[in-house]
Image 1 (cartoon, rainbow, N blue to C red):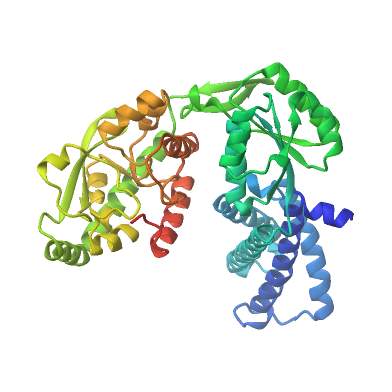
Image 2: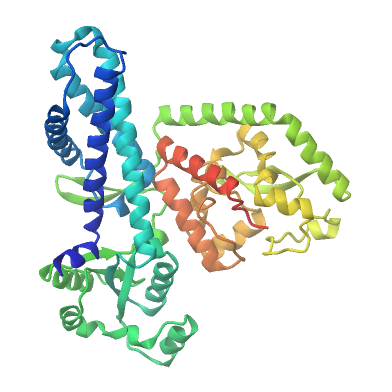
Amino acid sequence: MKIKKLMNSRNSQIIFQFIADTLAIWVGFAIQIYFRFFSGLIAITAKPDLTDYITGSIMMSLYWYVIFFITGMYRNWHLRSPFDELFAIVRTSFIGSLIILLLIMADNTASFRMMFLLYFAVMSFCFSFFRFLARRLQVFLRKKRFITIPVILLGDADTSLEFYQKAKESVSWGIDVKGIVLIEELDEEIKNEFSKHNIPETLYLGNVSDFEKIISETQIEEVVFSTKETNSEQLIELATSCVKKKIRVNIEPNLYDHFTGQSRAQSIYGIPLIEITTQLMKPWEKIVKRLFDITFSLLVIVLGAPIWIIVAIIIKLESPGNALYTQPRVGKNNEIFTIYKFRSMAQLKTKDKETQQWTAIGDPRVTRFGKFIRKTHIDEVPQFYNVLIGDMSVVGPRPEQPKFVDEFAKALPYYNRRHLVRPGITGWWQVKYKPHTLSIEEIKNRTKDDFYYIENISLRLDFEILVRTVWCVLSGHGQT
């Protein structure tokens, strides 16, 4: 029973990490022994036997467990992306390998450099490979509901039901919503909302006044506070009730109406503060990002020139009109610029150009070849010229048309804060989104993703987005 309860927990992630690391250490140690003693690359006469391998593997396991524990590698995967974990593994492997090689340097100083590079490369690969397998296995088990995290949602009807829908769609989270507790009375309107979202009324556990009784009678691991209301005293009181019963508390932030896009949490001598910063990236990071934009854009434009010419010819042959399509977009600091794309739709008439609209799912205006280039994102390639001249970046929030920017800014006062950085060809929202239609809810979700990028902007996050973009292109992720 205890094992089952442990598996149905966020703590199960540490078990998977521990097993993956053990396999990585033993396999990596075996590979290292082969190259060092049996490959002939290093001139060593004495060779270890099976006993030496087992003893060495046990010692190395204890050593790496300590190194990984000290460096915080046994952490909740919900708090670390796969790419963050990869960078952390490489960094920790470098430090751990260097310490080992420094300790045994007197053994054979002539081969020190080769031994260090070999051991570092082998351990980095093994740790990354086995942790990747462990991560994929756990995602698979979550999707099959073998591993679940029992949760109660607490909040107002709108936000709680919205979170429930997200958890239901994102099965890889492993969240099993056991019930919903509302801070408002259940009325006919709320019942209709339950019905509208196909949510059984049995999930309604009661009102916030019965919260302490509910969490006592329900077997849960954590409570998610999801509400637009900000009654701090009430939240603290409810959170305290959870802590007393050793129930984890997660609060869905609702600060997007305030300082989103420029805020970072910090503490000064124990006093928690939210810093509103104007410097999102370090100066050297800005320089590197811009140099990368220029270099990458030139490579795409020049090396792919023959392909882009063929694409343009096919577009011209399929339907009358220009191969390129231009449109005004809003860039950094709300400046208007002209964006370039390969035309994927029938040529618009002059009067139609004046009434721009979003492309609908299965839009009849999209040509046959247009569907292909939209699906593979080839239609975006001319935007690398925009990147080259500084209107855009390779990675950043998607630029929108001025007309829609005005409309969205009226509905969402914080919308224009997404223009703090250069817009991008790809971005955090672009690699996550699903086929969509125009709605305020869609814009809210997109804006939250844009703000996540702005708040966490870094070269490492750009790298992660680029890798995810490659997968999106190969899997035909674009909307047609």
